[in-house]
Length: 193
Image (cartoon, rainbow, N blue to C red; front, top):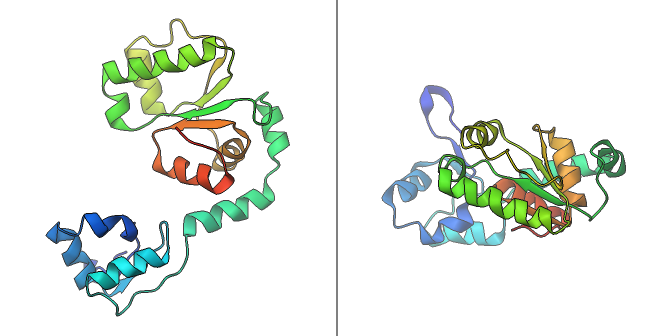
C-alpha cells in the first residue's frame, strides 16, 4: 500500500511463502524499508515468524485474512440452492472449472490439452460447469476449441463473485489455475485440482 509521494507504508502479501524467496534482495529490501508489515494473505503465526527471521519485528501486525473474512461474510448471505437452480446444477454433482492464466490460455498446445482433458471427463458422464474468462474464450475460439465439446461440458459467461463462491461450495471438485479460487475452495472444503 502506498501513501503520499509513493512511499511504501504497508505490505500485505504472502509473507509465509517468502521464507524460501528471501534470497531475492528486492523482497528483503521492501520488507526492511516498509513502515508496516501486515501479513494478511494466508495469515498465520508463520508469516510473523518469517518476518522475525528476517529481523523485522517492529510494525508487524497479524490481522487475519481479509479474503477469508469476505468469503465468510458473503457465505452467510447467499442462497446456494437458489444459485444452483439458476445454473441447473445439483449439489456435489458437478465439477467447477476456471482457467484464465496467460501461461495456459496463450499457449495453443496447453489450452488444447486442457480442453481435451475436460472433454474426456465430460464424456464419462460428469457435468463440468465452466464460467469462462474472456481471454480464455477469445483464445479457445481462435484455436477452434469449441467445435466438438461434450454436452456435459457447460461453457458459461463469467459469473458474479457470490455465484462463484456458492458454486465453489457446492462443487464436488474444482479444476482451476487460480490461486484465489484454490484458496476459496479450501475455505469451503471443496478439493481443487
